[in-house]
Length: 387
Ligand SMILES: Cc1cc2nc3c(=O)[nH]c(=O)nc-3n(C[C@H](O)[C@H](O)[C@H](O)COP(=O)(O)OP(=O)(O)OC[C@H]3O[C@@H](n4cnc5c(N)ncnc54)[C@H](O)[C@@H]3O)c2cc1C
Image (tube, rainbow, N blue to C red; front, top):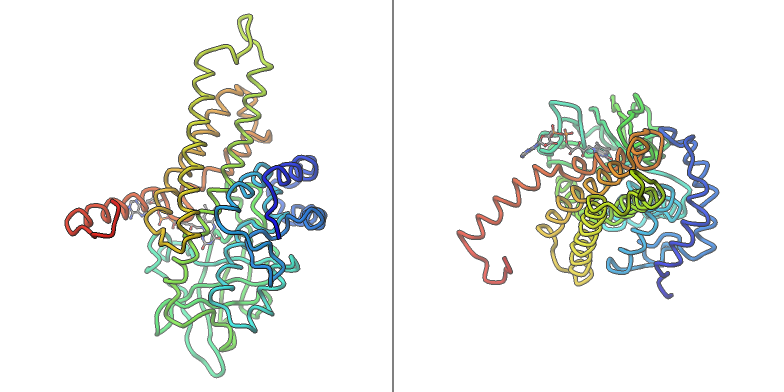
């Protein structure tokens, strides 16, 4: 099956997604779900559905290099990635289920996610003093009971929780951190509240979950008990790279809108676009986007070649999340007061991009880890390493 082209995704976004964007979706995940239900059949008809899963699950089976431009094009609209079923958190959850799930879990959870019949979420972060940047502070406990496990704890800022059918929950066990698949209708599992994070278009919003005497069967464990943090790490590398791809599309859209504005808007007798300081902002924004794409493309090529990208994906995440925020900030500046209208697209995109500097590892955390790693390598160089 030939991979779809960038142009095909661009046409889909232009013809189907952008016209359906609506203020009614702001912080209303169920309204967003209704629009996505209209869009997914259209994405299927155009051969764009599920680019990131193997063909045996109905996906397009694309490699990382192939998917990068498609996810960027899809990301020009907040509706694009979810319409093509390659949005977070379902996309990384599908990868976790694919890699760590048993055949029965593939049938019960992965295939319905791939078909778009269910939504899911991934629950690791906890309110203080629980796990955040430091996952070893995990407080949610799972203890063995007859025929299964009993979970107890709280999770918050869980993207996709509103309307999800199940959560992949990270909990502490005697063996160490362990992943559990918990159906949202399990007694003792509950959505306490929906959190209005600054990004208003997350599929399934963000939620706080409480697990109270929540009993799950033995077969709810995803992967091996005790390997939860290792699995979370495996999940995060591709997840953050996919975010870089999709969100580059969001930043590009803000820049396109700002460029249109400065070409139309006049000040002191000339279009804003004729002013050198405006031209410099446009140039700097394109430089940031270009550098972001190159870093993502390098990581993607390494991943397709089966090489580790622990260091590269962390560097790309720091650079791209900050570069895209700079692009959106310049777009808002060029748009003047219009860029400050919090219901207009540029300001909404800026709000969407801001938390990317925090989730998937805050910039400071990555810098601390990268700095230590590079200095350690300097002390004890790895002859195979290139830095
Ligand atoms: C929009 C959004 C969506 C999210 N979705 C999910 C989800 O679906 N599932 C999930 O489990 N979690 C999710 N999260 C949570 C996210 O993963 C955490 O916010 C992140 O891991 C940071 O944890 P924390 O908020 O507890 O911050 P803390 O750990 O309290 O850190 C606060 C700040 O301290 C600094 N800091 C922390 N550690 C270091 C260090 N070692 N060196 C230097 N500075 C440091 C950083 O600036 C950091 O931002 C989401 C968060 C947001 C905002």
